[in-house]
Length: 534
Ligand code: CA
Image 1 (cartoon, rainbow, N blue to C red):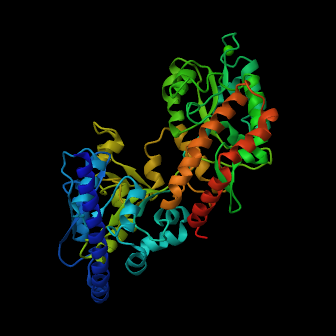
Image 2 (tube, rainbow, N blue to C red):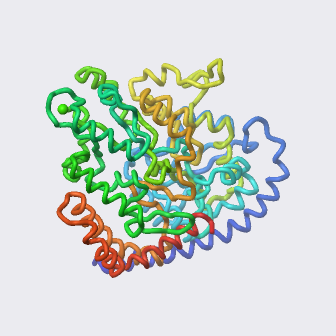
Image 3 (tube, rainbow, N blue to C red):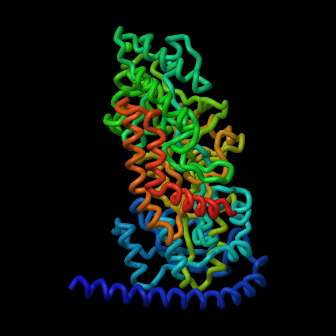
């Protein structure tokens, strides 16, 4: 029974592969004709119209369990202004994006426009012939997207697949930072200390937090340095010494950081800090609630965390007078370099399927969202309804948005604004909903692009978000499934003081090599070279 089903599926899949390839060829020919025709009529259209007559395309998109809905206010406006009307192919009751995607792919009938949560699945569909490579279409018909590809490296790197084709137009994000260094300003004030600017100053401040009773209860109960991600990512503090337990590129060369000099400096210091009680003794076990627990208990002093770490300023001063978390610049490392490792990165956007009969019109429509007008519609909505333009040229959301019964973002999304399409997310949109502390944090980090390394792939939860070639991926995962737990276990034992780092280091490196680390570096190098366009 089961075997039959697998066989049947295999046959369907093989047929699909063939049919996708067939379509690609077809569209290739048609594309040429449309290109020629398109050029003739280009200058005739008024305003933002993309086509002369209203034209409908189908779209597969389900963002946050919200299948695309043409009734959404902003999409009605977009249709009015562009003449392009989109018709969703996912039933409004569908809440399982993955299931709907697999169903569409296995049916062989693809929507004209496809957006999906997983960029690598879209790229895979592209390599199978189901999605059009957009490189030439963009070059010829989408000047605003092309300009961004040329000027914004992170956008380009996200858009370009390992085979060099662009299969999807990303949703760009302009804020650079994902996380910040946060410290208790009220504790600094109380002990008459300045915010630390170097790793040595961090050590001194944490030591003062430990010894001088900043919470004023007469007990030595402060937890100077904590991290709610510590249970899954124990090496976040290693960033102080510009190292980690992961891969990291330097000057074009991929390294595995535990094999580098900075790692030795970092681990020796972490061991010392932990032993001296500067680091949460329960870092590995306290879990994701540790930030809530340690801040509301007036125990935690410093952490590396998201903008939401600033939210406590709104509530905690009621019980902890003067409580204030502020973001500070990343402290300079042992070499005097200021660097923030965690970055935000453009997300997945949308694609054109190989079954689309008029990809030229669709790419022009997609380009509209990178114009000022299209960008305003997707970030702010409709002037006079959801936002106003202030005297100084800035924009503000109206009370309809800010005081609706939903959250401001929830309300915007209910109108189709900030949907997951290829677009440029405006940082002002994000600032509009941030608490003052979070906004100050984002503005501080965003005004220092030099703190962020160039040519580094997305660094999410401490791991490089590189894409791997299908032939390498299985081998890479196999090697790392043996290396990762080993490194985590060793690092934890050194930090907790149950094993001696310097005594074990040489044997540790030998073991990494025995488990294939050199091959893993080689695979990462290969993917990284493609990533930076070498
Ligand atoms: Ca105390």
